Length: 186
Image 1 (tube, one colour):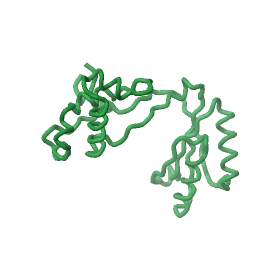
Image 2: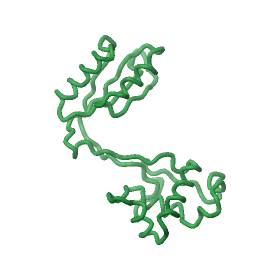
Image 3: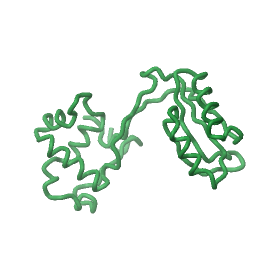
């Protein structure tokens, strides 16, 4: 398989690209491709994961963290995050709730939705009328469907948005959850 065979793989800019040339000279002590390959499948679940990776790569933890920061500063790595596998944690019901919110209220309502404990993700998208009138989306996870529906009812009432048009779209199938792969494993 090559880099271009999978849409989940993003090719890194080459060493001579403008982004790479902005990195400090000392940051070249650790190869960016090797570092990204070392972290792209997840960090070790230990107190000092970067120390473990640094030992594997034959460098110091400090040098590895500096190199990682230089890749973030250069926007080669845009974010580091956690991929939560809800199913394994007992959260078996997931629903995307889509709302038709007046445009002048989207920011305020979106902020308040995002503050709810059972909402893990909230974002705005454009409407595609007449088929799709919804412009605000939020993801709700729960142990079962009843828990998800109860949570939605509760926060809709508390936030005063129970009257807004919405749909609750439960997940029908679970697909693989993982972060972006920048380089295919050997």
